[in-house]
Length: 103
Image 1 (cartoon, one colour):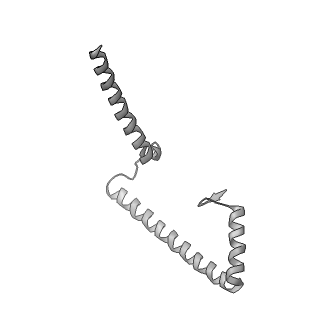
Image 2 (cartoon, helix red, strand yellow):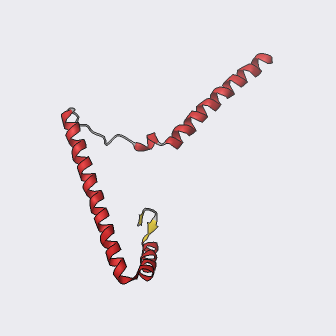
Image 3 (cartoon, helix red, strand yellow):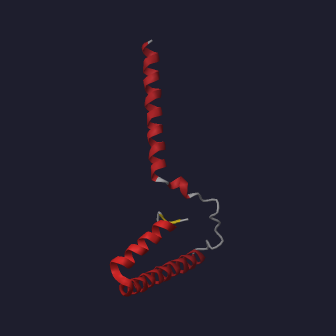
């Protein structure tokens, strides 16, 4: 299992290096700070989720089903690939029609 692209073994190595560099006392305070940051992020996420839910309810969209919504359709790389492919196909068709007119 990976978390932010870091596997369990890599995380363990990072933790050991942090203990060696920071020392056992400093690592405890660093972990407390990390815990506070994680708690703050969770609180922020919960507030955003509650506000979004309230906004959807006020707009009458609380029963909106987003299960069919596929975020992969919004991948900018895929959009660019498709646009370039469409443009290349248009150029190929135009070139082929000009070549056929000449022949």
